[in-house]
Length: 412
Image (cartoon, rainbow, N blue to C red):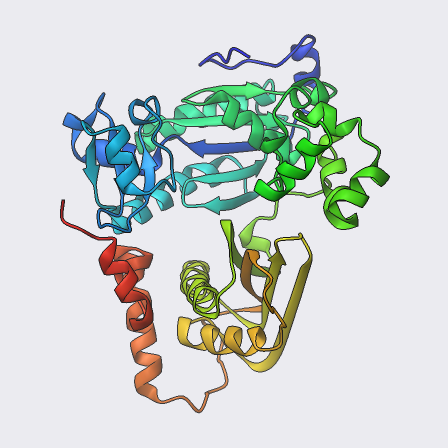
């Protein structure tokens, strides 16, 4: 499918559909975000293959320019493999504090268009643009103006996908890359979705893909033709229902903006299931740090901690605990998360997704019950959050994570 770098629609009848503003979900994704921020700082990198990531022997690629992607370099690839594929590339260690500042800048642009912004990471978000129907001629016009504003105010390229179905807007922004815009008109979702490889659906990992291949399924359309009962026998009821719904372009989710959110959470899906106790605890500790940063940015704390795990077979469980005081710093979150983790029987099952969140939110300015922790601990935690706010999530790390981190930070 050809994608224009000007506002476009997918299929026939685009203009009439867009005039009704049925396509209210907009997904925006910054193109090679870390690379483009580095190019702003050093214009000599423009046009060159640039790879940002850990430079040590265990480092991985965090972001690759499209020049590097053309020779096979991808995010999450071991840095050694990237050097083999692209020996002429420029390799840079991440500048996390700079990325955080630029992320806040682009999210300010997003929120200037709609108050309903759901951030997925530092460089991508969903927006509900239905409230703009009186201000723009069409959803495509919103997307074009948003991309232009990001370019003018933040100096960065971005790709936008727009659809009446939330997850399809994300697929559309992927199809629009780099630096493009794609609208999937309401009613044309299946025409856009069904030719895609089934791997594009969220939830189709290696094991699931192998099971679908055994059924002769290669595209989303072929998946949609498989009776749900047949899928259930092969994949289990939960995963089969999830995939059947996606293949039918069914996604009831709405945009959840953090400003009015009842909870704040972070989660991560792992390409390879994690299973050892050390792996799980370190992954959870990193998530607690990320959650603390989000709470700090929002000026919120929570009275209930929620733990979420999804296993390799797609079974999902959650545990939660409430208490009288509200917490927002990493050490307190980690204490509660570890206590909840102890209530889960993991056994030998691999974990494909791990999440931690808090609900029962209060403003951090509100008086909070004092804890029995030492004042030194609270002061240290607050100081660490202030350093992360300025220099990025990895500026201050728990001691248990430093060994892994230093191995990935080479000076090459």
